Image 1 (tube, rainbow, N blue to C red):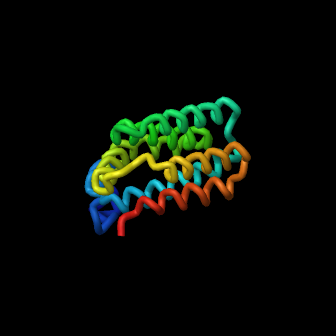
Image 2 (tube, rainbow, N blue to C red):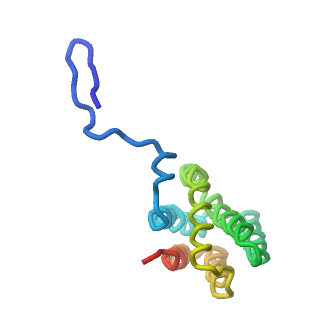
Length: 160
């Protein structure tokens, strides 16, 4: 990539062409998607524990209840799971994290549906408990526990 400066000449600005965000997301494998979710959601969980309002906590609880109710259809379950995690990101009060999460959601949804198809199971009691534990840590305003639990949960999704 070259940059021209009038009166100064032509200079190399970059050796690689930067790939646009949506193109990079389409190419990402499931593990890359999960690693990006970890980068966004672990910090968001810690911030949500510190910053969440009572109404945001109620929204997270409603999303957790909806997620628990969606245990028969994996696409509906993934949508409810995304709503739960988005409620946490919103409660972090960081617009950049919200924008990242939202721009990432279509690829993340596709990856999670794909992962559930590969695994053939979803919505277990243990999985729901992991989400409830994150919620409880946020309710208790325990940022360290919320982030550790979010990381632990997301790491269980990675494929070897």
